[in-house]
Length: 179
Image 1 (cartoon, rainbow, N blue to C red):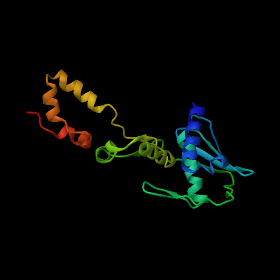
Image 2 (image 1 turned 120 degrees about the horizontal axis):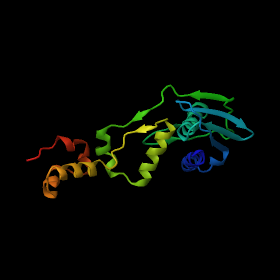
Image 3 (image 1 turned 90 degrees about the horizontal axis):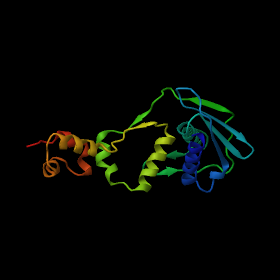
């Protein structure tokens, strides 16, 4: 729902800039558009972010930080020196070029993600939203599907355990050999 998406973006802002979060007002108004769209404006001391989805609103928030406050958010560190007085974005409207923005690959799932805790995942999810990612690769439950298929093919648990590696090797599970 729009309210759930608004709260998610407000939580993102609170995590990223807790001392300045109250200076941003987020609203989500879903539309039938196939493209995420956000609008930025200023009302008094508050920056108003309106999006047609939570992803659009998060993208609008980062767009504002990057283009009006010269901030940068990356995987390894942030530059969040936000000016004391927030610049006026002058009622800008931005629409994404594409309906879907894909992110990740199978190797990253195995090399890195298998070892992350919730804090690291939450930061990655926030980063994805702020960069407009709305179609991340998700291997959730893939191993269970393979277990069911191979069980129906008659393999034992021991045979499957020999075949499948640990979480760091999920991307290569289909390349193993069955004896």
